[in-house]
Amino acid sequence: MAFQLRHIAGSLDRLLTYAEGRALTAEQLLVLKAETNSDGSVKEILAELEVAIFRGSLRVRALASEDLALPRAIG
Image 1 (tube, rainbow, N blue to C red):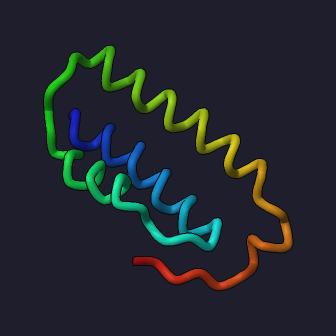
Image 2 (cartoon, rainbow, N blue to C red):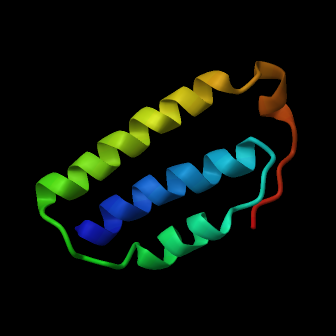
Image 3 (cartoon, rainbow, N blue to C red):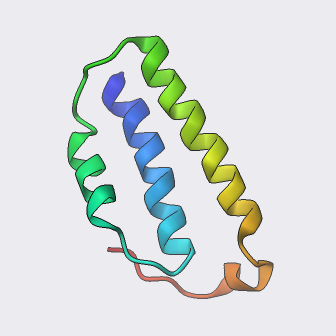
């Protein structure tokens, strides 16, 4: 379950990066590789996900509505 929850958090961050028209950073690529790490309690992993969702919601609100229809490349 740790992988799935960390993958949700990481995927949200990466997809929003693409939606913002930016490329992934070296740090984001390291986080992607670390998603398979099962260290941490359920409470800690859920807290990571909660932070990612909160930050993601702020980023979505900051997107200009006219930018949402622009084509974006992934990868």
